[in-house]
Amino acid sequence: MLAVAANAAQAAPPHAGMDEVLKDRIAGSLWGLFIADALASPTHWFYGGDSQVKRAYAGGIRGYVKPNETCEGSIMNKSNTGGAGRGSNQGDIIGTVINHGKKKYWAPGKSIHYHCTLDAGENTLEAQLVRVLIRGMAKNGGVFDADQFREDYMKFMQTPGSHNDCYASTCHRMFFENLVSHGKPPDRCPSNDQHNVDAIDGLVLPTAVALATVTEPMAEAEAAVARCVGVTRRSPALEAYSAVWAGLLRSIVAGEPLKKATFNACSRHPALASAAREISSGTFDAVVS
Image (cartoon, rainbow, N blue to C red; front, side, top):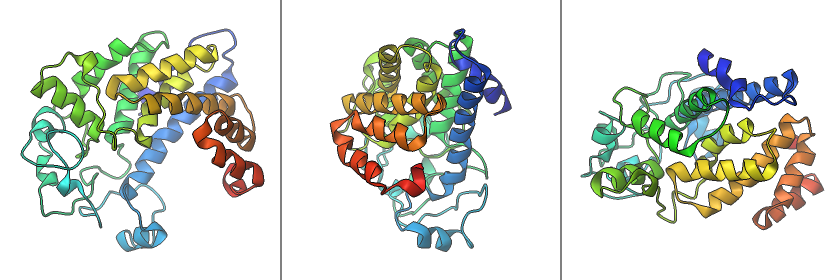
C-alpha cells in the first residue's frame, strides 16, 4: 500500500494549480478509502446494527480485525457462481475464471462470511481494484484511460493469487460470464441485472478518477467518472450518481465545509432532493458539520 500512497497524488494531472495542500488531500482521501475498506470488511452485509457487530466480534471493532469464517444471514450460499445475483453454484466463473480456488466458500447450505479469506487489515476486491486503477493512471500521467483500465482489470481478475478475497459482486461475475461463456468482446461485457449492479459499490472505482480530475473542467471530470463506471458495469444510474459524487469530492478536497458541500451535491440530483432538505434542516449535523 505504501507504493500506492506514493502514487496517489501523481494520479492527478500535474497542472500548475495542483498545490501541495490539494495533493495531500487527494492522497489522504485515497488512504481513507483503503483504511475504511479494511476496517469495515468484517461487518459487510450486516443488517442488525451495533448488536449484530457485538455478537459477531466481542466488544465490537476497535481496529483491524480478521472477518469471521461465518456470517449471520449470509446469502453467498445462494449466489450464482456463474453469473448474476442468486442462482446455481454449478457455474465456474467463481473459482476458475476469477477468485481462483474460492468457490468452496459459496457452497449451498453454508453461511460463510463474504470476506472470510481476508486477514486483518487486508483490502477487499473492490479496494484492490482501486489500487490497480491508480497504478494505471499514475503510469499514464494521471489521465484515466478506459481501454487501459479494462486490460488491467481483466489481467488482474484472471490472474491466480492477485488478491485474497473470496467474494466478487454481480457486476464482475456478469462481466466474465459474458467474456468467457458468451465470447463477447471486452467492451461489451459490462452488463446489468437490474438489481445488484445499480448499487453503491459502483461508486468505489469512480472515486479514484474523481480525485484524479479535480483540476479538470467539471464536464470532463463527469465524463471520465462515467467512463470508469462503464468499464465494469452498464449502469446509466451509477453514471449519473458518479457525477454527483465527483462534484462532492471535488468540493471537499478544495476545502469547502462538509455540510455545504453535501447539500450542494445532493441539490444537483432530483433523487437526492430529500437528502438535501434533511441536510439543510440539520438532521445530519452530527455527521456533516
